[in-house]
Length: 245
Image 1: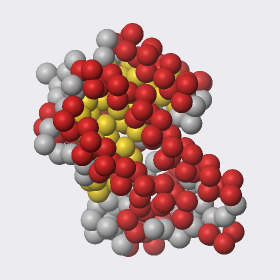
Image 2 (image 1 turned 45 degrees about the horizontal axis):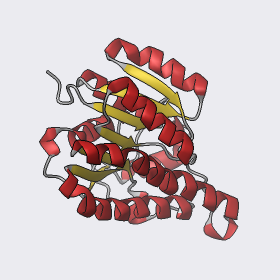
Image 3 (image 1 turned 60 degrees about the horizontal axis):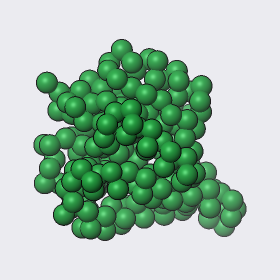
Image 4 (image 1 turned 90 degrees about the vertical axis):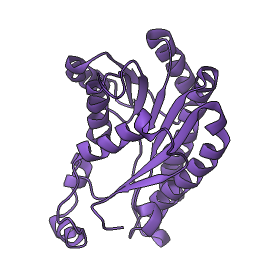
């Protein structure tokens, strides 16, 4: 019996990378999973691939669209009967040095990463409160602690998610809902693989375990925080960066 047996999870940004690995892990642990992403084609492809591991349903959703998220949450509840877990994994980067950063670059990252997380939480919390049970886990980043060159918008969004997580954990604990975040470091996703080799090697020298992380290693932490094993973990951010932070 898996750690998430009979639980229902919504995972955003789940068509690839860490989100896809998380969906696979949750299915293997016995959860029913709704995967969400902005590309219809990518969502359906991922859902088809993941169906071998358990019950999965794909949704094309833009997390900046609150009305669409409310519709998706209602559809998940109708399909699965409940919503136990929300993994706020979706996010974007639009890097630029601060003095060159455009208002569009700043606003878009805040809108997707921070406001999108807010929107997703707002869509599922009423159901979780009715159930007197819920697990919310959001993607932060080590950049939210340390900053990273050219990422003032991204770092701001991720630091804000950590602050929001602490507040939500305090407010929602009495309803049986825990709220936590995960701050990954350098994880070998397709996006990170596109980073110039020189920069990757520089990053590698600063990682004590001397390797980059795998998406499955972040998925494992998501699964822990979503499980009963973490029932007394609330309002915190777990760092997954090989010891660099």
